[in-house]
Length: 274
Image (cartoon, rainbow, N blue to C red):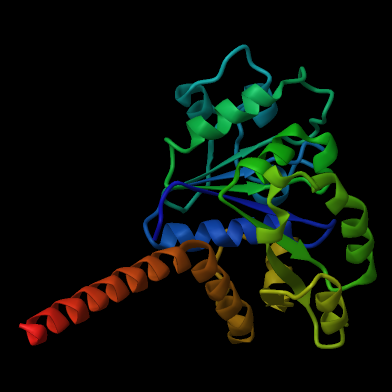
């Protein structure tokens, strides 16, 4: 597994961005990786919807980004540890905050932030705002991350959202053609094939899970899915994890094997000629 990856999770409204970001983080800490989950949305701060009983001690992402300067130490002081987990913490705007709570910051601050983060954890997961065009941190994550997971709800509203939003990411630096497109919260009756074709094909999908929905409502997303009916979701999540964190490694191993085989074949031919 390749370390020091920044993964941005982006999608249309209500596509499950926060849910997937947490589930990816959970899978990583099971493999003894350290993770910082950045909840970048300043419009609807998520921290108290997923950790309602955790004391935040004024540990606001907004205060951090708007400070005079940032360092590894100042980032760590704003990290909120997730109870009953190892090596997982959250950076988030706090309940009641909004885009006017703190002073504005610039692109240089966003760049410094992500550079510093890479030295603090094995992996960084960024839960992006769907209103990225007004949120510099989410927009920066879409540009600077190693991989973007684009969540798509299998409905007409998602099509409308992306028809309006994708043109705003037309510059080459956003690399939208390499986004991992994932249909989210899929139910059997939904027109997933029609929506998938509309987006030029879908690499992965995550089916609807009643247990997962209960976790959302009860603020238990940091717990594992254990219901047998959630096996489909878990299997699909593991496939997505393989794409995000293992495919490059496996391709590299296959390349090395192929090169060794070609070298051996070449040497054998040389011996035969002698």
